[in-house]
Length: 354
Image 1 (cartoon, helix red, strand yellow):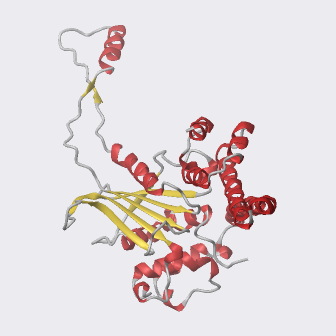
Image 2 (cartoon, helix red, strand yellow):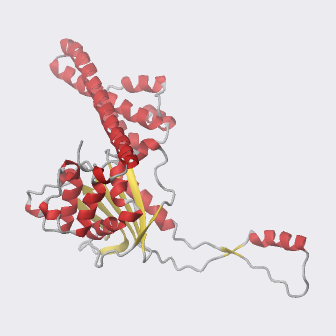
Image 3 (cartoon, one colour):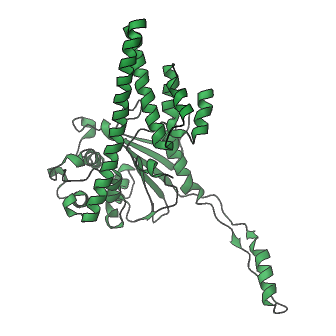
């Protein structure tokens, strides 16, 4: 077993960045990634109720919400599996701390000057007045919202390990239009410490190096020593320093990750086998090229069925039959791309009939 936890697992991510006792680690990470002019000195963790709705989704995306003393909101998430609409998802979750800042009305007070009313009258009028709210005074001032997504995979077309996005004007020179909503994506597989752009003398690159290789370290590398934040991060991440309960939780989290990966690999291999056999039969009739195409198509079908079963449970017979009968590769590709965004079987039925 490795000496240190895997930070891309649910438990590992939360242990390092989501515990009150270790929040200086999170504050340093956020400050460096966002290139804040002044480092965060204090944050408070929150659970505003916008986490993923199901355990199935929680195994793939792990979120931490916090707020600094100035009221700015930070959403930091780790993503194990590829999501078709990751940018949409980041924007969707950013709306919660934005709309949550709207001022709420307050109950109208009751005043009696002429006579002392009976208790029943007070109760009746309190109910009547209580249903009315005084419109709050609000000028729409908002605190900033920052979203950081750490991904254990590469987005299509990405070139750099870290990208920052703000709302800018379309026309050159693309000046900043709004500076209170920012998105950062970190794609760990693209980080390559051998390239000059990822020089480890920069603290940001040290963080990327730490996240990508922590599970492989057997001891603290020299470049991290004499740095209080990183030394604490290594101490927190070391299995030997954890309680038996935490080690068990980590093993459970790690097993979920392995099981999900193994299930996907198994279904994909089964799809290749089915495709291979179908390809051989088709190859005898239509030639080798058509057979190979059929094999790839069958593999994609199996992968799609796995994703759907993980999201919604047992697949209805008629839906599985309809998917297996699809012959156009682009239809399967479309379904694979949109599977994460589907809400239920009915939405899928509509797609199959379109």
